[in-house]
Length: 296
View 1 (cartoon, rainbow, N blue to C red):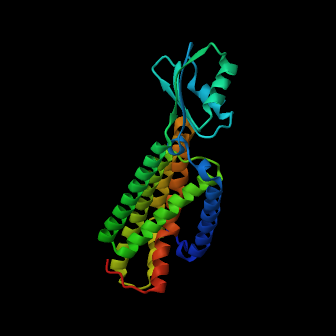
View 2 (view 1 turned 90 degrees about the vertical axis):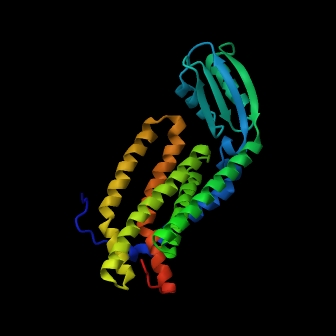
View 3 (view 1 turned 180 degrees about the vertical axis):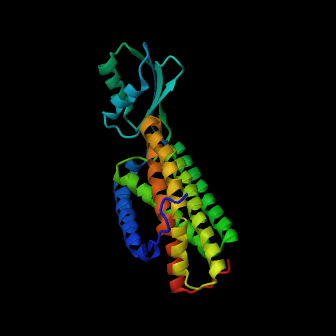
């Protein structure tokens, strides 16, 4: 199925404009990230307060989330326990449990609930989570480099890997610029985005390899551009069907999936953009600096 019949867009020719666009967003986002400091991270990473509250009647979890959000205390999670709907575990930023309990007293009355447990999430847990997330990411990048080097060539592997780094930095920049915090669900989203971006890039690389073998031409800029155009309909269909699911999660998945779906939504769009404008363009510019005959 072709959405665009015989497209002839000059994607490679526009690469410098896209380099500038990506650089502006990423640099702006990273500066904002640095200024925000610890505010970039949620409870999973910096520790915080944990309280377990039992109400004497059933309370809607969405109502609790909305009330806590209005307090402006930063990152928090609300987990419902059991089937009755009157017991909850709430994790929030350090030193904020008092504000939450005070809100419950004003909203529901001081005798309408019981605090069954109150503790502090140890910051040492955050260090462990950061280390595991970093190790998982590095292992994934090494795996991507090895797989694409074996399947294509080293330059293709580097192009795809740089595109992945671009996507993750772009998503983190958007999170920083929109004032959202990074938690465990965002890490899961980032790893998903990396896989999606590589898969999208591999499809384009496959077509590039086919066209190089067919033509045996050294005009790689023309071959790369034609290959991107030939796979454009497939790329658009893939991202549209994926975004449809993610948009459903974003609008109907509830508060617990909001940050995860927002990260995926941003990442899938940027992953498609980088597959078209970044991954192949990096290889072309490398070839211009240091010419190389591909032996795909």
